[in-house]
Length: 144
Image (cartoon, rainbow, N blue to C red; front, side, top):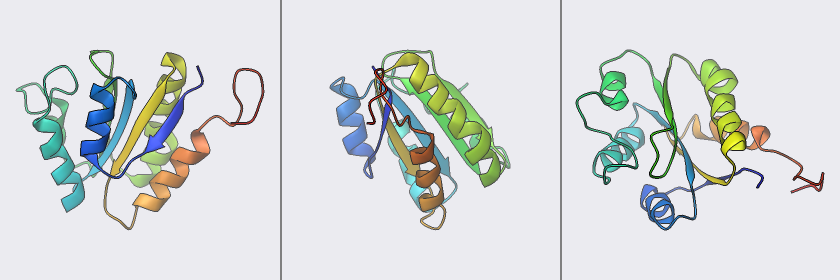
């Protein structure tokens, strides 16, 4: 199945769809804005197995203590086969971290929830780059 990224504004909607098995993959981009920090609090309250935010060895805690402005998390619901990246600039996010997340989504297959919990000034740039990275043709070469 060709990977597809869905941009959804509400973390609650994303979590519900993931729990129902409709979105097996997720990509979360977070910054230090109010929206980003509120989204992280939502992550910390999720059941174990989706995203272990708030645990002693949690990458979110490491990011919170770091100077990096962005954090990207990619994973699969109910799987520990994910990764996190602390990102030092918007340029690195657009050229390295987002392409890595899309690469993994394509490899694993299935739909991917995409949440950019970031300041409104940079959200359009991040969402545009995410759209550019999406496949334009399916398995038979037909445009999606």
